[in-house]
Length: 235
Ligand SMILES: C[S@@+](CC[C@H](N)C(=O)[O-])C[C@H]1O[C@@H](n2cnc3c(N)ncnc32)[C@H](O)[C@@H]1O
Image (cartoon, rainbow, N blue to C red; front, side):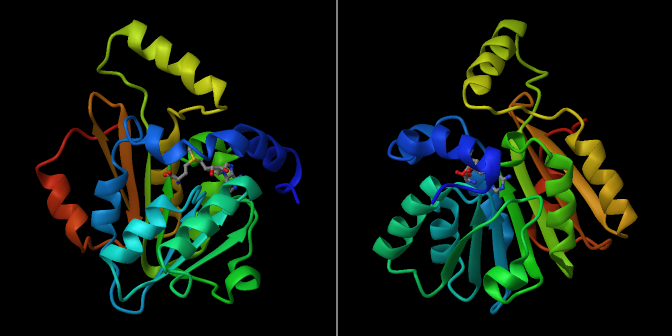
């Protein structure tokens, strides 16, 4: 079975072979993923959802790091899910990580997992591959529990790097249908405010990557402390 509709088929085509070398190659330029996993800090029993979970790499590391939380992953690509299922099983984590196919803009977690809301929801380098990334952001906020946190890590606009580096990276990312979104910080701030949430946006590594978060108005958890000594506000 192929992924949902045209975009699912495109993602399957991108990852049909790439999935075998994905984890080994992406670690060099998908910066900030491990920092996001450190900052998840779910409480025992909390539900943690990754949207666009790919090979399951993040979910497996997070499940090992936070053994008392429950993990869920959604991806549009059946090819990526095939790899994710194999890795989760090999890691002996099938009872703690549940995976399902779904489109980030329209998935129904109640139907997929029997869970309507999650205490932590995260997107790691997936928004920049979703044409309707605004819709995906909206959906992610809708499935975040009232006291929960939505966390995003993705490409920035590399504002601190020379033009030739930016142009080269943009060409490379376009090969994989990746499009960093300059409007992401403002969009998150706006959508968070509409829901009575507070947004935080941090740019790192000369704006190679950005970490974004929407949580309850009063910050809690380790991210706030981490950001106090961190890089500049983005966008
Ligand atoms: C660059 S990979 C990131 C994978 C993983 N999050 C990571 O950090 O390694 C992007 C993932 O987003 C998925 N994706 C793209 N569009 C999607 C959509 N509309 N709904 C769900 N997943 C999507 C792709 O299939 C792919 O697995």
